[in-house]
Image (cartoon, rainbow, N blue to C red):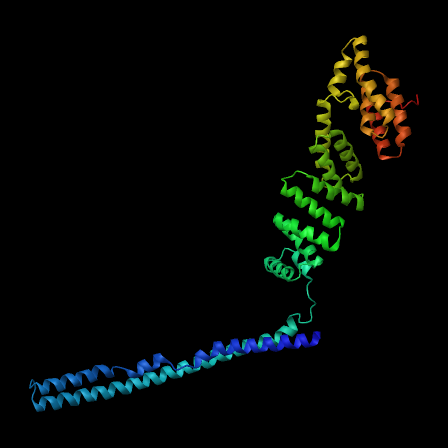
Amino acid sequence: MAYEDDMIFALAAIVLTLAAAFAVAVPLFRRDARADTVAAGPDPVYRAQLKELERERRDGLIDENAYLSSRAEIGRRLMASETKAADRAAMLRGVASRYRIATATIVFAALILAGVAYPLLGAPGAKDYPLSARLNSENPELAVLVAQVERHLAQNPEDGRGWDVIAPVYLRENRLDRAYEAYANAIRISGPSPERLMGLGETLVSLESGFVNDEALEAFREVEALSPDNIRAGYYIALADEQAGNHQAALDRFDALLEKMPENATGRDVIERHIAFNRGRLAQAGAPAFGPDQQDIEAAASLSLQQRAEMVEGMVSGLAQRLEQEPDDIEGWMRLIRSYAVLGREDDANAALDAALAYFGAESAAGQQLEQLATELALSGGKS
């Protein structure tokens, strides 16, 4: 079947090529109008003179001898002119004929050369380039391919693969309504997958100018259920918590995402900005979970012992109590240890350091952070 298709295509190409060649060559063999015009020469001028001479004779303006003399002279000039004109026309026809033959030869030679060179220099046996790959490439024929897929889907609306192919193209071109329709059809026909659900959710977020609405959130939660390590889905779920004002839930999610990401991963700076934002909002709301900040600690160091004790009771102790219940907060431990050190409570700082190391393990990434902090603060870790 494939061989027959190739033969049909080859025959069609040959016929079209020959038709194009004849369309170019036929005009070259038409009669040369310019040569005919030259052949005519000045004949009409002399013939007009003869008519004028006849009129003068008829009107009696010249006698018979003058008429015969003038007529003979005009005839002589007419014959000489026609001879020269014929010679020039013959020369022009010869040149034109040689030009036509040369041009036609070049046209047919070019076609024959192309036909011989293509099997040698071209790739007649190359395999088809898959449509999905062509659509996802930066190819100037993208618009044509999209139109072909759209025409195919208009005739085959239940082709889930077609919707899979066209949906990300619509999203990349910011044709959001079409992208939403394509992702929805792909999910309806082929079922939910992390890729289809992510595309649907991100299209909805774009349609809402960055807001994660309920439908998008549901899509991202389905992605998380199918692919728990999907960073993008986790980001949008955390963003939904942040937009809803659930800053603690958002902070917990962003912290968890940051732990999953490699140190040099793209997007860590975005996650870190969201972490800082949500921490700031919780601090503004008076959340005690994060303990005193650096400014509070420095202020406490300058107070009297009684005032300092009251401040520690309200802030540092609150942080210590929370860490007893939620010991997996590495940054909370580091803040508690730094707070004790700044306030001169070295024993408490060492005790907190030991407790944190016991929980996270000295060889873990969190343990290395704690060891670095202990070195910075000159703590012994309870070993002294």
